[in-house]
Amino acid sequence: MLVQLVASREVDGRRMLSLSSNTDTSLDLLPWMAAQRARGVPCMAIAQVHADMPFMYNRALVEPECFDAVLANPEYDKTLFAAPNLSVGVTDFAIGMHTSALLRDGGTAIGIASLGDAIVYSSRLRHEENAAYREVIAALGTDAALAECIGGLGRFETGLYGCSEMFVNGFLHLLRAGIVRRRVYDHPGLQRALNQSGSERPDRALLAALRDTGALGSPLAAADVALLKQWGVFDAAVQWREGMLARGASECPADIGDEAALAAVCAFALGEKLLGGIHMHGGFFLGPRDFYEARAGKIDPHWEIPEASRHNFPGRIAAARWPVARRAAIFPAFPLGTDFTPEEIALGVSLKDIKA
Image 1 (cartoon, rainbow, N blue to C red):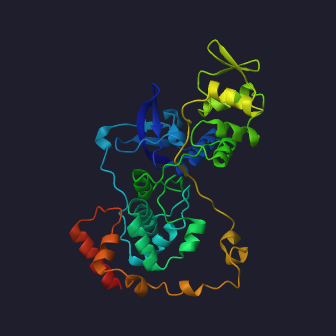
Image 2 (tube, one colour):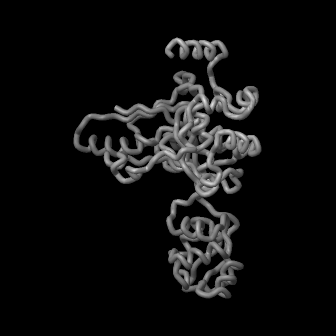
């Protein structure tokens, strides 16, 4: 039996359910349960609507008929809760700072738990208080040349694309901070052309890149025009008519083979903005066992930790070159907030000391 909290909303005049933040197992389990049921194996999938569950779109949207029963009663809407954010220690903060310097302006994934919080907070510091960020980076002894080669120390001008197994609290902070904002498109040809052209909107450079990478033919076929309209590269009013582009009574040759023809098509057919881009994808990779072992060849067996990186111990990090008051302001115990009361926080610190 599968029982899951879901969100419910009317979408385009039809009642739909959203698997919300729990799509990773349900999208696999529901078809499997349907196959089991067809074989006569007793099983049941139940959805319970909760008013406070976030309504997520794209693959999270499902028909109510995907479930055998849907329970919708406000009396059962108990207060939702999440696992509390753990405090972040100075060691995790240091790892988060070093990691944030390896993020190139243009997409990555982050971890979860306290280390993920440290990376998120450090990325926000880089984006929102860049001078303070660079001060901390220098105090920690981060290899600035390596950072600039792989990632960067500047603000996220283009923005990141999120990819994670789970939509954790940290991603919400990155979205609100305007860091995760780069749109990615679920069409390899279009995305490849966007990467090549550097465009973020329908323009001549994007259409030329689509042509040059082989994503489009010339002259454009009906399928090409349909694809361009689907993603907003062409205006929705543009039609394909026997080798011509039509817009009302006006027509234009569907040829994009040379620059003059390309310019004419752009002036006639381009849309205002791209459609269907997403900021984040949920997914993860499980490789064979040897993928995770050193003998898989990811690390040279003769590699040694550089001298400059052999002193990253908690004591040295805590005594880095900035005043204690400044360190406390930059490295708060709960960088993304907490539901703990002050009394619970104090008790937690004491219990950690007892455990130690």
